[in-house]
Image (cartoon, rainbow, N blue to C red; front, side, top):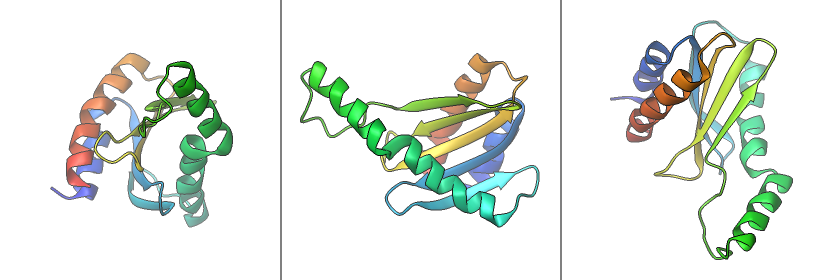
Length: 134
């Protein structure tokens, strides 16, 4: 199944989901995106860069390294942060790092009224399909 189809299915499956996207942190590119509304291209361009900063910004990397050191896992190549949830005024943004490719992150955007636990559960399930399609 194609990534676009899988992202569209994620929007249908995750409660109150308005958008789903997939970002390659290495290249900083937005690999795929599906939304229920249209958005200006400049917003889409910033999305991949913002996601990269969220997971790979210098302060985030420093925190990850400090946690690894405290746990005696300095040589572990895996990233410490797997999921990040951002609550904005009107939306819930769920970002998930791929287990298959640590340089890929999916983002799911839901209305603020969503049950956060249900959104996370459904997003985790959708992530498996997104990873398989990417």
